[in-house]
Length: 202
Image (tube, rainbow, N blue to C red; front, side):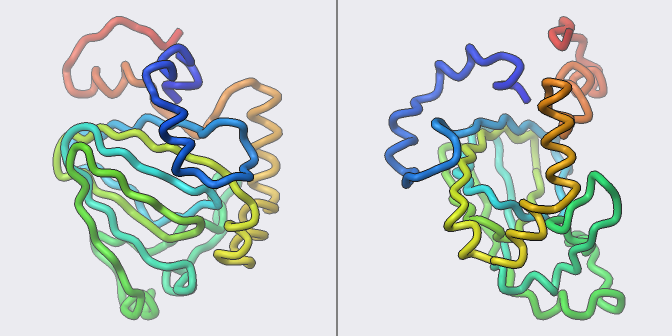
């Protein structure tokens, strides 16, 4: 949540140039910026979102795998906890268990490797997972437009946007004034690699 904690960093982003690629109407006056930094060998599991995303690769490389929303049953999404919504798949893309998840074998996957300067557009509810072959830094530009999200996959739209988990988390974040999706801080990441940094998280 770098840009939430330090909004002055947003001045370095050319918002008018980005707005030229974002069709109105949208639910927020400006895009939402998210900073992603990962060490080599890190990855995420299959997931999707109602958001539209322009992902800008800044440093290193990042491998993306994507699958259209139509193939949602192949990802075996489930609600297993208050923090896990229906938009999270159960299949481990690094070592898929085809016997347990037989439909996954039929899911078409599109693979792309981003290099510095590349920009990838991720439509609403497109399933994706990422892997960092090396240290990777990128910027996600998110915006919400409910009409394309509902058209992309109407069932997923209602199961995620209107789910009790989503509504409860939004209320909690507004009451507590922060985003609880970030479980670690930047300084803890650096320290785990043996790099001492000044504590800027307070």
